[in-house]
Length: 134
Image (tube, rainbow, N blue to C red; front, side):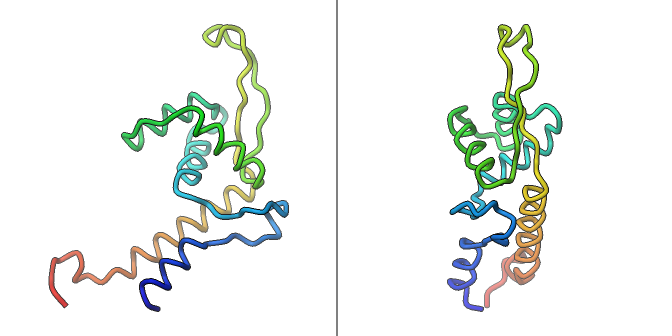
């Protein structure tokens, strides 16, 4: 498969529409994938600020809370996460926090994304890593 066609295939990676609650967008972008991974990592304590902190720690990049909230809303619309209000805490000034959990579809899309990436990594010829010329 030519490289350009492979790139297009990867960029248009779509999950089975039967499991997306018929939402119009089923593509999983890089930032969406990172947020989903953090929801899984923070199992039971995945809320906005904790996700931002985890993303910054894991990626070394600055992350805006508003970007995370937008992605979480989009992931919930796609059926990849669910949310519920958690209890109020003193450190939050008595405010509730919205906790996120991976759904079955969210776990599936993460597994498919990992499998696709691993497959592609495995297809890179050894010569690329050894610095040889074709």
